Image (cartoon, rainbow over all chains, first blue to last red; front, side, top):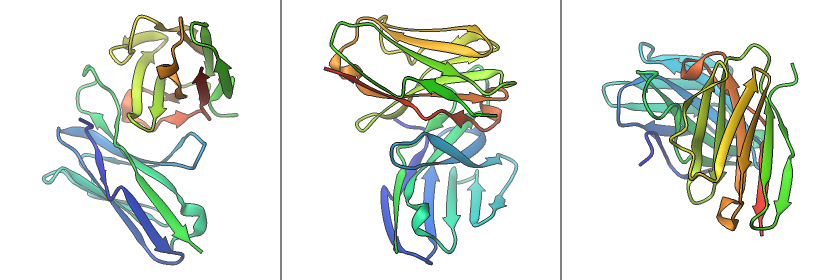
Amino acid sequence: SQQGEEDPQALSIQEGENATMNCSYKTSINNLQWYRQNSGRGLVHLILIRSNEREKHSGRLRVTLDTSKKSSSLLITASRAADTASYFCATGPISSGSARQLTFGSGTQLTVLP
Amino acid sequence: DAGVIQSPRHEVTEMGQEVTLRCKPISGHNSLFWYRQTMMRGLELLIYFNNNVPIDDSGMPEDRFSAKMPNASFSTLKIQPSEPRDSAVYFCASSLAGTAYEQYFGPGTRLTVT
């Protein structure tokens, strides 16, 4: 199964509202990354949080990491229609020798209604 | 920098034909990744190169798939012979060094095998 699992699978909100997406994972990590994918496009890196960090901000994005619960959340404040996209979390393993490298979850489809 | 460049953007071919996908990573990046994305299986890592050397190809589905990186600025993913179940979007991504850093994705190649 996937290392990172996003929740919810789909989220629909009104423009201006905040959107929160969660990610849970199973094994210890070096870092956790969030990516956005607009329809028909490649993934775009949003933010990387390392295992020794608890919170990180970038513009309207806020990411938290709780290694004890093996979970992370992505908060988008004051959402805009342009934020409509799929959002993926990806976990980087501690050991660079592991068979699998950055492992992506199945994503949260966010729809921001104007 | 132009970002990660992939070609072609779209490929339609008949079952049994050879398909070659191409990727030019961001200059200065030492790691290159090939992913496949489908609705059913999500985003899957196929193979990962570090300094032009394949580190992990355990994600390559079958012997019909092969990847090369002859130099730091070019990689190919070849499918021979292609099958309808290979239809997917194939992404190439590069990073400074493995999964400790963010990955930059190309726009993808949408492959349709009829």
